[in-house]
Amino acid sequence: MEPTDRRLYNPRVDQLRAVGFLAVSALHFFKPTYAEELGRLPGSRFFAPFILNGYFGVSLFFLLSGYILSRLAIEQGGGRISYGTFLLNRVLRIYPLWVICLLLVMYQGQISGSKMISLLLLFVQDLPPTPWNVAWSVQQEFYLYLLFPIMFANLTRVKHLFAVIATCIAVRLSISYNMSPDVLRDVSYSTIMGTVTVFATGMMLARLPRVSWPPFARRLLLAVSIALIWGVASLIEYGGGFFFAKQSAGFTWFWFFYPEIMAISFGALLFTYDIIAPPAQRGPVSATFSWLGKISYSGYLFHVALIDFVRTWLIALGLRAVVNPFLEFAIYLVLLIGLASISFTVIEKPFLTFRKRYVAQTP
Image 1 (cartoon, rainbow, N blue to C red):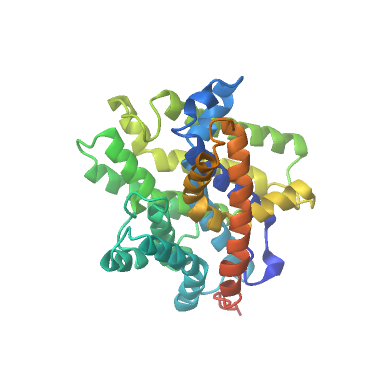
Image 2 (spheres, one colour):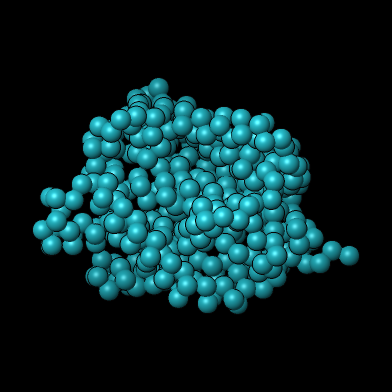
């Protein structure tokens, strides 16, 4: 997403955000409907764990949010953050499209007025089972926005980051006694007791100076970071899956430290791809992924609903039986990018022009 000062725009962050967006979209498309078809493809043991456990794309969003908000504040002088102006900017970023999604759900008769208010104020984590049930991540994102100005003013050294992580671990430990692995997973993955660790790691990475490493060393570290993420995804997949199977008791400690594992894995990817990389080069692939990152919020909110829409119409046209899953995914992805592009241009972008600078000039 472009900052209020477009000179500070970093396309690499949007490119990584596009990776998270595509991971979540592919996950919800293939799992559980086409998981078996995906598993029959040659080499599926290597790429299927990424697709079938794309839930970690949301953790990448949280890391990037902490990183880009801190990086922009530092590059604008690192002065005091105006809490009110910052929150106004975040409301302009999140709420216009969120309100429209809630109105669509209400129009379909799936929620009442009181539920609408609770969701609008982000008091509850999720919608009822509908194609729009992504409220938990919107809620977590906004809660992290509420904490950011306070954290930015105080999280200035590595020891402060360790203090935040240690606090989160201590809180999770205090409530995790006799928790089943699936409940502990939910606590670590989708509550502030886990997401703040990932967000704070992004904030701390933003304080590292940019240094361009030799190409060989950077590519080697990039390969290592991707291998680390693949290893985590494979462990989840071959251990029973993220949500669709109950994990054994042996996974308890994995889920307990899941936020820290995600922080290390995606922190290494971010460090390699942006902090030690040379200035971003322009090109069609780079521009495409930068655009996908810009429209990722619209794409994320609409992606589950569009899956149902595409499959319903393929059935209505009598094509569902003749269109293979991968062609269906290609159709879905083209429509999703088109819809997200329109949504970003018509709904999101006009409100973003009202944002104001929220970092005070340092003397």
